Length: 186
Image (tube, rainbow, N blue to C red; front, side, top):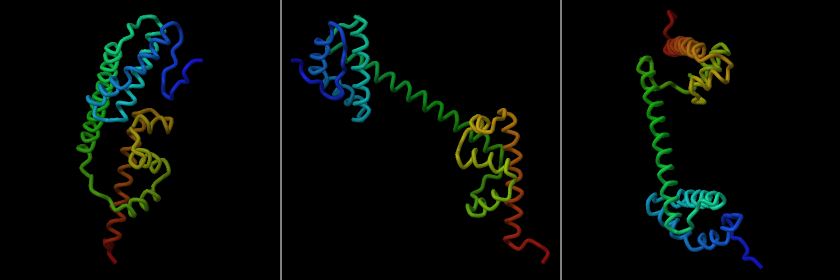
């Protein structure tokens, strides 16, 4: 009778299955330890260990595997490098998006902290198309292309709508501010 499989253990098929299962039992602590010592995050090391063994199963099924602990550590190293590359790419994209946002903010000097209650009241006064575009862009924090997709508009039409909506919001906010300070002739 075969040994019951443990949770998380790969289930390869074919002639390499017994060898890979034995290697799994032998090399699991080494692969996990290798990854944990390099990334310092237990959850990430577990995820990368799982990815390593899934890649090993795929290679074993193709018949291109040289089953050894060193081979598994090599796969683990590649998985860790792939993770770091993806993370680096993600950080570059975030920095680029932040740079774009701050460049856009530099174009609009009216960037003060707004009173949330007054802002909500002003939003309620705006035309629905202005309200929805401002809510999607600034409260839901969607990018302009995402707002455009939600509204079924082109990016350029959405950008123009956002500019008009911000101007309408600014006017209404400033008028409300003047009313609040008793800015009338009364």
